[in-house]
Figure 1: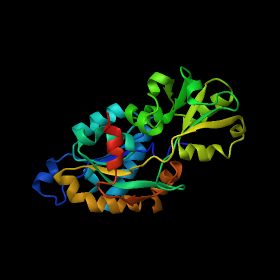
Figure 2 (figure 1 turned 120 degrees about the vertical axis):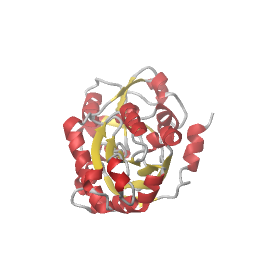
Figure 3 (figure 1 turned 90 degrees about the horizontal axis):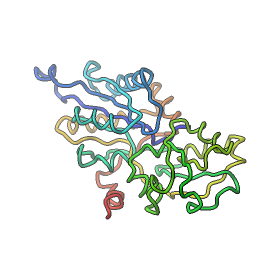
Length: 282
């Protein structure tokens, strides 16, 4: 029940042609950044390392030039990236929009799920309890996406209608199912879910107690991006090709299923122009 776009992966690339200087270069780093996701600890780092090893083989990067790490929060992930400027990022629209200038991010591929390439968020309440966003002012709202960039949440999840942290009492949750159970038990007022989470809810008995009173509509996505440097540009095509095959591989398929991802499709560098305008608008 994790959001299919809550999975963020950062690959700090190595030099395309190893030489005497390569031994002194920083290792390639694969960093999963999953805002609102569980703090992975050793398990999260293990997953990142396994994916890093797989991607190294697929992209033709020397195994000893890549390492994995996991973050469930944005701030430490961004700090890590600033220390590792040669980076590929497999992640969501929030981190792209918020950090594209500071980190020089360029979109390369979008995530595709069972319902297509767009994300969508729904706000759920107990049936008959609330009828609109207006009714929820000052009420408790849970959701993993609430851990993402606040401006992204306000402008894309809520379409600029409100400032979530001012309108609700927001509590990011790394356990969507637990949040929904609390909602069904009348312990919280509302839960914000992604498309993948909403689809999973349909198969659960507690769905009968809940209803959606707000939907974001389609939200554009990004899956793979890079911090544009000489090193990442040299590896760009190989990494894009490797990521495109990730969900069909033995190592990548389980992760893709967990996050509701069916694949990745290449995108043009200017594909998110409208999203940038929307994010930057005064």
